[in-house]
Length: 431
Image 1 (cartoon, one colour):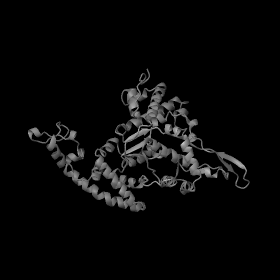
Image 2 (cartoon, rainbow, N blue to C red):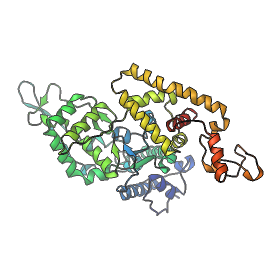
Image 3 (cartoon, rainbow, N blue to C red):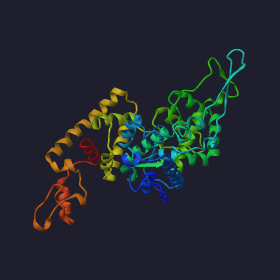
Image 4 (cartoon, rainbow, N blue to C red):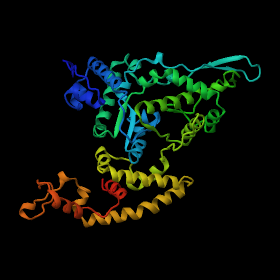
C-alpha cells in the first residue's frame, strides 16, 4: 500500500499542513523511506494545488522578501548562514516553496528572452547566437528533469521534505512563509516583459546593471557570469539587450514581493543599486528603500552566534515579545546607518564596542538569577507560584500559574533589568 494513499483533503495553508494532512502527521524517516514514486506524484499534485490556491493570500505585516538568491536557496545547506543572519533581523521572511516548486513543469510558458547575436570583431560576420533566460535557468533539480531516474527523483524530493519539516516550528509561527513564485511569473508575464523593454531603453538602468556586472543577480542562483562567444561582440542591434536577464530578475522579484504584500530587501550593493535606479525611473520617486545590512548582521552574529547556527526554538524565543524584537531591529537599523561607510575593520570594532559590554552585563545579570537562564521573561503559563499557601515554587515541577497582582510581582522580580533589545540579545547568547 502506498504511503499516504487515500488522502483527498486539501489544505490551503502552508506546505507543512499539506504534509500533515497527507501523512496524518509530519513524516519521519520510516514514513519517508516507504514513500513510493506514485505516492510522491500524488503528494506533488496536492502541494501544487494548495500552493496555487493560497498564492494570493496576503502575508502578515513585517514580512520581507530577500530575493531569489536566499529566497529560493534558503533550504540548501550552503545558504544556511545567510538564512540565520536574516532571521536575526527580519520579523518574517517570505521564501520560495521548494516542495511545490519541485513539480513545476511549465517552462515553455515562461517569458522568453531575446537571442543575442554575436559577430566577429573584425569582419562583423555572424559567428554565434546566445540564448539565456528563466526557461533555461530553472530547468535543473526539478521533477521534469529527474523523472527519468525515479530513484534520484524520490531521493531529492524526500530530502526537500526533511528540510522543510525541520523548519516546521518557524513555518507554523509564520516566521518563514513559503510561497511559489511561478504562478506570479506566469500571471504577470506581459508586465514583466514590458518592464524589461523599458529598462533596456533606460540609460540609468543600463548604467546600474553595468556598475558591478559580477554582482548583479541574473537568476535565483546566478550573479554575473554572462556567456560570450570567444572573440565575438554582440550585434549592434542586440547590444542593449545584454542585461535583459538582470532586468527580468529584478522585475520578477518585485512582482513576487508585491503579489504577497511583502517588502523586497536586496542583499547586495549591486542589487540595491538596481532597485534604486528602477525607483528613480518611475513617474513618482520612491523613498525609504531598504537594503539588508548583511555585513553588519554577520558581525553581530560573530559575537552572539559564532557558528551561525540558530535552531528554530531559539528563533521563536527571540520573538516571544514583539516589542523587544522591534526594539532590537530598530537598534540594528541605526547601527547599519551609522556604519554605512565603515570598512571591515572599523565595522568589526564598532560592533565590539557596542555589544561586548552589553553581553558582559547580561551574563552578570543572568548569573544572579538562575531561573532566568532557563526562561527569560517567562510568560504567564510558565510562572509557577502558589499564592494560596504563601510560597513561591520554581522549576518544572511547579504547576499553578500566578493570578493577578502576585503574578505581576513574580514577573517583575524574576526578570533582569534589560531594555527591549537586550532581551533579544540575552535570549541569543543563552541559547
